[in-house]
Every structure is written in C-alpha cells, then in structure tokens.
Image (cartoon, rainbow, N blue to C red):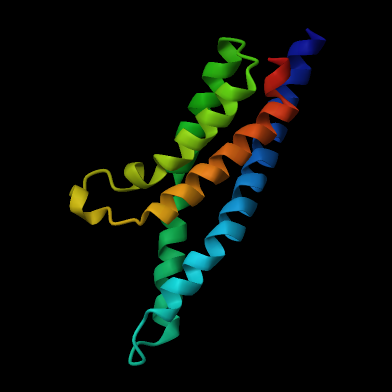
Length: 141
C-alpha cells in the first residue's frame, strides 16, 4: 500500500520534471528557429506582429494536445510495467513529434508547413523528456 502511494506521488513529479527538461531543450534548440523567423520578416512588418505570431504558435503547442500523447506513453508504460529506457526515450520523441499533427486536426494538410529542423527539435526534446522520466520513475515501474 505504501509503495502504491509513493508511486502516486512520484509519477506527477517525474512528469513535471520531464516536461521542464523538454521545455528547456525546445527553448535552447529552438532559439535559432525563433531568430530566423523574426529576421526573415520584411522591414515594413512590425516585430511585435512577429512576436504575436510566435506567442500564438506557442499557445497552440501548450494546449492539451501536447499532454495527451505523453500521458499515453506514461500510462502504457506504467500499466505494462515497462522498464526499458528505450521505450520511454523513443516514446517521448514520438509523442512530442506528433504534436504539430494534433494541433492541425480539422485543417487541411497543406496548412502543416514545418521545416525538418522543427521536427528534429521536437523529437530531440521528446527524447530528453523521455530520458528524464525514465531516470526518475520509469526504471522502477
């Protein structure tokens, strides 16, 4: 009984720390993409508009669409008692890499115009989040 209560406390903490690690990787690796997006705007456009576009994109990524795939990976790993680091690392990368697809539900596929660099940043951030979760909670599933 005490072990179950410990897991109930540990899992949300591990998930939050993995999310923080993922956010750190997205920000640090995505910094170059943000600078490129702001610098390719024409001189007639106001930089505030570019910042608002980026904030809008970040708000779409911060929606429930980002939580569901990661929570699904964690729930399956906990229920199946998977202890493999490879499962959590690859699962985290896949879970974050499909987020742009989930944010575009109901829109035509032509609306999804992300460069390969963005997909790589998201996948690497997911790998980092999966590794952090595995280190904290996944290896003792």
